[in-house]
Each structure stands twice: as C-alpha cells, then as structure tokens.
Amino acid sequence: MTTEWRSKANCLGTDPELFFPTDSRAENRLEVADICGNCTVSAECRGFADQSQPTRAHGIWGGLSVEERKRLRETKGTA
Ligand code: SF4
Image 1 (tube, helix red, strand yellow):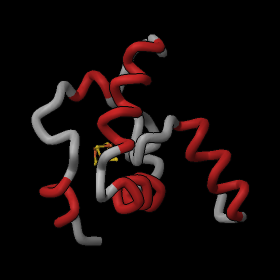
Image 2 (cartoon, protein in one colour):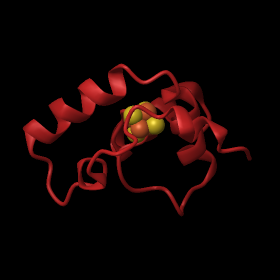
Image 3 (cartoon, protein in one colour):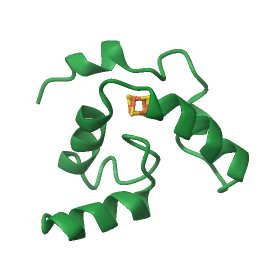
C-alpha cells in the first residue's frame, strides 16, 4: 500500500488534533471540512483508513468521521 499521496495532503502542517478530536465541536468539523474539501487526495486518504482498520478506525480521514465512513462502506456494500 503506497502512501505517496500523503505528500500532497492539504492537511500537511495542520494541527493533528483537528483530525482526531476529543470532542465533536462544530467549529472543528467546519475547519476540517474546509481543509479536506479542497484536498486532491481525499479518496486515497479515505481508502487508506478503510484498508488499515482497525488501526486507523478512529479520526477523520478523507474528510469523513468514523460514522460517516462506516455508512459509506455500508452503502457501497464493502462494510
Ligand atoms: S482528505 Fe485526508 S489527506 Fe486530505 S486534508 Fe483531509 S485528512 Fe488530510
């Protein structure tokens, strides 16, 4: 599994706490949505998390929370 996509991540240099929040403050989600929404490697990021479970089951990957990624996998029939 290649991780070259990480060098193109829009979140490089940002506070990791934004992506692994200890609470679900709305302002965090809005900031993350802005960062991830403009990221050109969000699909790779989400795929990496999905393929790395349970190690990377937590946090926001590809702009989606744990619950959002789970729902997406269920919708696609890949859960
Ligand atoms: S989609 Fe992934 S790589 Fe891109 S900014 Fe969000 S957390 Fe970072």
